[in-house]
Length: 145
Image (cartoon, rainbow, N blue to C red; front, side, top):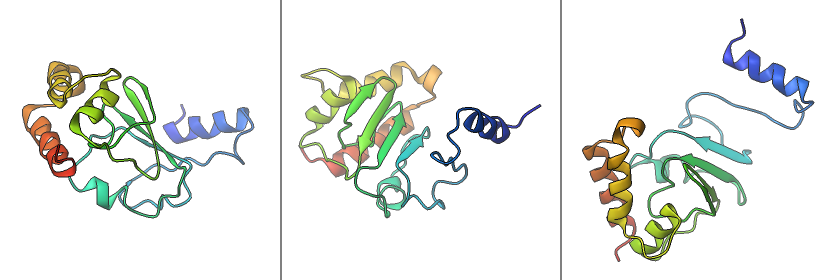
């Protein structure tokens, strides 16, 4: 039986990608992301992530793939729900409405529509009222209008 990393490594060998792809698993807060081309993050964003995780030496053009919700207050380049692609340097939304419309993939959306979606899917995604309140505070600090 293979472990996850052994299975991944054997697949990379089979596809002749060992010299082109490097997958690093572990604590993202301790990882050196300066050489990354793509960062995949499944965890929800916490209030210190913007500075502590994404404010480090990440190269221009590096792509961040986020699950469920992009970085709060920043615009995704592409949405393939539930995945969001964001390219560095990050582009801050000019308004909460612009951010919500980008997150939900439509025009004239409001931040409350995003919170409603997260709360509606709380049982499948695991977001609770406290996390949604934290996201609201983060958005209000990052975007004033």
